[in-house]
Amino acid sequence: MGDSGAAVFLTTERLVLRRFTTADADRLVELDGDPAVMRFLTGGKPSPREWVEGELLPRYLEHYRRYGDLGWWAAEERAGGAFLGWFEFRPTREGERGEVELGYRLRQAAWGRGYATEGARALVRLGFAELGVERVVAYTMAVNAGSRRVMEKSGLSYVRTFHEDYPEMIPGSEHGEVEYALTAGEWRARSGILGA
Image (cartoon, rainbow, N blue to C red; front, side, top):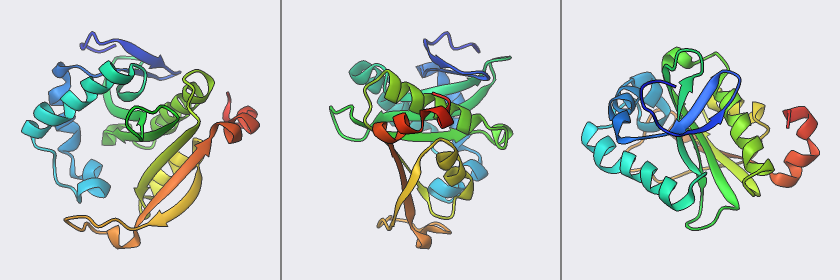
């Protein structure tokens, strides 16, 4: 499980999702320091260490205190414990558990290996089968074809394209953002297909 010693949240065939700890700061700074990883988020700009340590990690830890089983999860390879990135599965509205946002950010070395889909499907299944989630939503830039494929492979369907007013435009943002979603009822109806 790597060297973090943090509590395991979910295990899949190839992944371990565990709680973040303050010891993960270097891993997050490295992840967000890759311009390719940040391309569709900040236009490639890295996240400053001060922000990761002072705002990001405290937010992750606070979600564990408040929601327990909904939040951000560090992803590691089951074989060997290499840090791959993270998955997000957290409430979209304060104090409510009915609707959660699904997200993921993986190191380039993990791209193209099906890890994002594997982790996302496992979280969707857990959310609907055990955590009382009623709707899963996910967002990405319209031009982020890779992320959109993961959403579709995870059972989510396109809902809409919308435009946000960001302080800094990044290449591709003129095409807007997309929302994908899946409800518990839809998931149950298709559970055989999704491997529930």
